[in-house]
Image 1 (cartoon, rainbow, N blue to C red):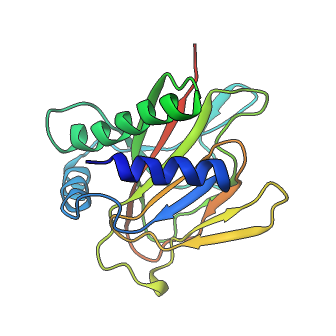
Image 2 (tube, one colour; image 1 turned 180 degrees about the horizontal axis):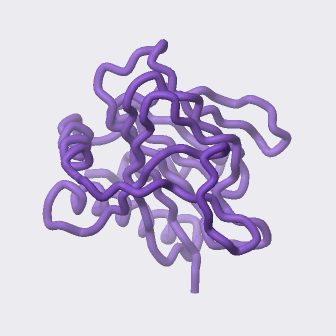
Image 3 (tube, one colour; image 1 turned 120 degrees about the vertical axis):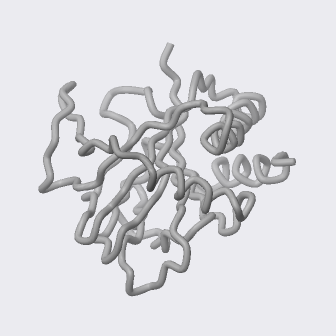
Length: 196
């Protein structure tokens, strides 16, 4: 069922290194995922990593996170899509992706994440990044856009974080940031990893 979508993503990664897809999956999925996320009470302040240490720095990043797990329900439905993409990318591009990790991210009003790259320096751990949005009726003036840059830090794209939009890009190639949100914003950030 997702074969056409997997093929579209794969072609874009080869040609451009990134893709933004609106109405990517089942339209009910982001609603169910947002309902699940909003019912969780154990979101933690997200950290940043540098020089091998993970630490909280709210001057650079303010979102809160909750890791996804297989649950035989809505999380598993999303993870099934992601694992299918992992297998497709490995088959078509020989990327050697070993697993997929992902977390819900909540940005409260005023929260942001400064420009960063997902693959840690001198490391091949994160190979492909995914961002999936869960926000219904998100408008331009609600803020919280994802801004993507090329390797020379030139602007490439600004993504409105509206429900069922999927962004996929090579983790080590595209610096990106989240602009301050003006209302509560939900997403799932994920990474296909090549850890041995």
